[in-house]
Length: 213
DNA sequence: TAGTAATCTAATCAATA
DNA sequence: TATTGATTAGATTACTA
Image 1: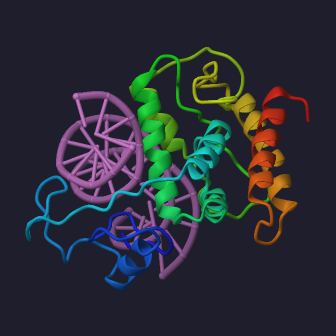
Image 2: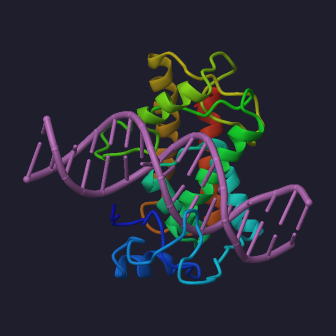
Image 3: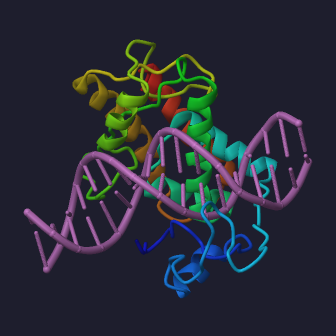
């Protein structure tokens, strides 16, 4: 593996913010640190540091999740700035969040699958990969439902339609991405007002979802 | 075409309220 | 004890040499 920005697994339990840096220092992998089959430590008991997200951080995460269950790297980085959390934590949080949403309401919550493609973007990956769609097709081959890929005000909103027809899918994805992108574009530098940016994301997504933009 | 990177889900472990 | 952050395994896709 070896990732430039978000190591997939960490050899030790680090305090917030230190994980990525130290993991990178140590080669970004866990090969040098023997572990037992599932998360145990071969070298003896080693406490895993569990991050406790603040209410504010959770609030930001929830709101973005409601609009974008599959944030791309750029969005995650913005969100990391927003919440003052490492991007890796953001990624893990979204993974867990998606997993639990699917688990708790598999029928009502088919995973959003916008297969987003930012027009003109050169980003190699955009968070939502076709592979995800295929995997989900195996797990929950659901069709039908309501509108768009957005979850709405919270994760329990009416089920997004998925899979959707490719054209509609791209249309909807593009609409949301356009809205989100315009929000990001409004803040070329580091965010000056964290709350207002998340409000913008949220609002833009809702607006796009409702076709009112 | 093979190798690599990035991302995904699912299952599970384990810390904390 | 329930919740949920952290980790692992395995799979898929895009990009590059």
